[in-house]
Image (cartoon, rainbow, N blue to C red):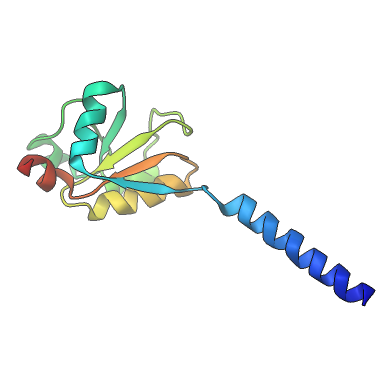
Length: 123
């Protein structure tokens, strides 16, 4: 009986440790373009555009920093890892990938803009 109690105790403690170390770590929140626009108007935010240079040069949101997904792993971003960072692309696919990369690199507050520049231009 004593061994069973110890085993259950170890399992409970182990489960709690796993939950503590994995909860909220790397959480990526999706936001829409209306929320992004509101934050751009009312806050000083970091917006990363992960489209290729040619796409970015064809039109982008004022203040957005271009860091193409294709070279994101080699790019050092001028940003504190515990401050909010917003990611946008053309349609939302590359931004989701980039958001995961940044989360894996230790960025703790990552926002993925759903719909990307297509949605931005349609609003």
